[in-house]
Amino acid sequence: MIESFIEGRVRLRSPILADPAIAELLSSRMTDIDGVRKVKVSARTNGMLLEYDKTRLPLTLLMRAQDIFLRMSEAENLPRPERYAMIENLVGELAEVLKR
Image (cartoon, rainbow, N blue to C red; front, side, top):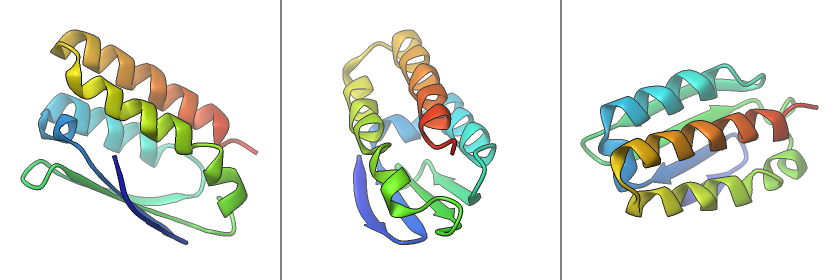
């Protein structure tokens, strides 16, 4: 799911981002995380670009979230209702991990 990761930006790519409900869920919930500046989701490319303030979300903190992003890719093989529920739970976990 993580395609590239540089300070200030994370690019994710996954077929689950083609689902408008999941794309909206990720976009709105990720924007609520303190330090996230911008979330741009493209269903056309199955991609999401997450821009963040590296002083408020330092690399050491983001590294704790890596496992959650990897677990999101497991949702690709689930039926749609289960996939949405799993992503919703993982985004909640992500918000908790990224709190200081």
